[in-house]
Image 1 (cartoon, one colour):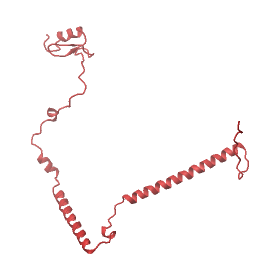
Image 2 (cartoon, helix red, strand yellow):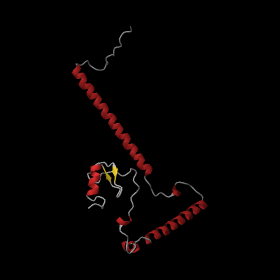
Image 3 (cartoon, one colour):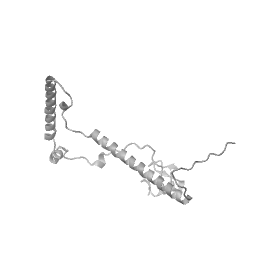
Image 4 (cartoon, one colour):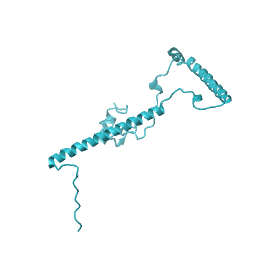
Length: 169
């Protein structure tokens, strides 16, 4: 059996009692955590700043980055001017085509139909429940005249007697 491996004491530290060692080890761990947290926060802040710099749009002309001949510069400026003219005409169209509330109200039909008459619900995914028309329990029998459900023969008799289907007396 090999001998047990023993941890060598540190040569820089003075031997201390166990309670002092625990408090110093806790303080060392806390300081390491704080350092790690500070480093993490610094990296996160730097990453966010880099993202902002990358996504920040600036209005620096393209000509300042690329050295081009005068012929290419003229073509580029003509293309940019054409795009600006096109954009400005489109913007003008959009701005002039904006409608006021009065215009929107004038476009409405004079007599709109009632929404509760024209509304349509989607087809249900589950079948309708078979509920007794007399007591509200789950129905087993169907009335031959009005197709309403009843749970027992007694409820069916009550339904027929009390005029549940509009026939009784």
